[in-house]
Length: 102
Image (cartoon, rainbow, N blue to C red):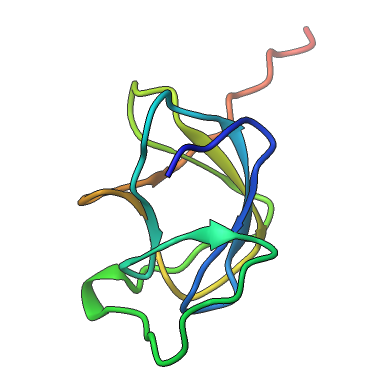
């Protein structure tokens, strides 16, 4: 599926919802809980469950990235499935330290 900046996606297996902050060009295989994510307005497939190796969970209000690829998403609703691009899991983006006010 092709994603654009500002696209709202949801998981088919748990309550995870996100907004794409920085998309990748072309088709991407963004998954949550081991299953493809869908548009927030689309109905999930019935009977899907979180796969055991994709049950790391997501945190609300946190950004997730994939290394230096440039992909960045913001989780708006947390869930039990973990985010991945293909077979590579997305990592929680670390906050930059603020400069000292000396």
